Length: 382
Image 1: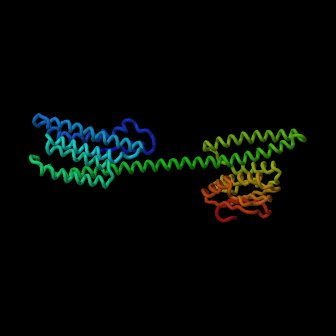
Image 2 (image 1 turned 120 degrees about the horizontal axis):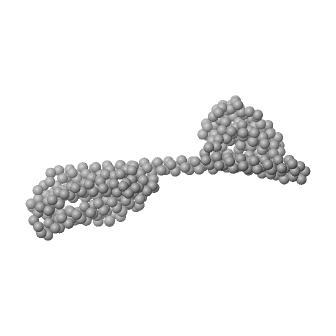
Image 3 (image 1 turned 90 degrees about the vertical axis):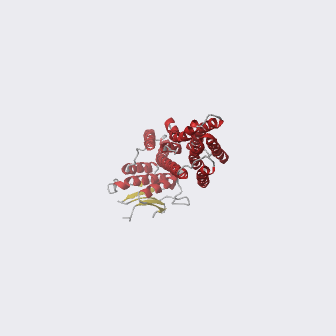
């Protein structure tokens, strides 16, 4: 009896505004089925003029209006995600429809029972399943009993069967509506989850980029301040480096937010050497990274960046060594060593996430020289 635009349900679930056509297409299809009210209309029109005839004709028009208005209002509420109508309002609509069917029967006689099919459809659309089943059962019984008990009425063939078929059909449509809405909401949830993950990625990358860059900038600015009284020219070079690093950090942040930035292991090794030396740490850094597979280079680059930042910030080390193999990168120093906060920083959390995505693991602990050691490896160590 009622066709539904599933596309409109999708708009409701995702929060986008449906077009006017989508918003009204369901009621338009519902109105098409009101053509079956032509039977009681024709029967009433053909009867003798008088009050019963007038009441029946008015009841047919009123029934059509109540049916469409009730369907439209409930459907709009569901599309907007509003609460279901109150039970008393639903039962009031069904009661008014039943009264109007009785009014049609004054002149249309047994032809007025066509309205029972519409009441069954309304009950299935408006009511919970158990209540709707009870209403449909009552309507089937009424459709079969009334023509056989009211004098002058002729029993309508298969009226009860028509009520059941219409009810089952509308129940299937309402279930399809519910499933489509649930599916659209699930897609929306997945999209929201993807957005949240992208935000986490950007936040993680920006943290790692700015943490490293600002650390190096701070160290170089402090060095320039110390050199300024004794060696203005070297201090000026350090200030120029600070400016260059700041511009590079800004470019990195912009590229990260745009999603186009990928770190380079060779660049990170070179940056690590500069940062460590600027902080007065003796650096032992590989000059090349050719033996590292392409699939691990970005992970190892982030590892070098995070570990170097921690050495400069927290280690108070005199030496730092970076070693590379085909499946492992290790950064160790001779500084203060690990404490109870190891592994709690945002940078290490992000590094663990990257390592897990690459099928690698992060190992933290004390180095052979008594300082801190950070190792990321994949598979069996070489």
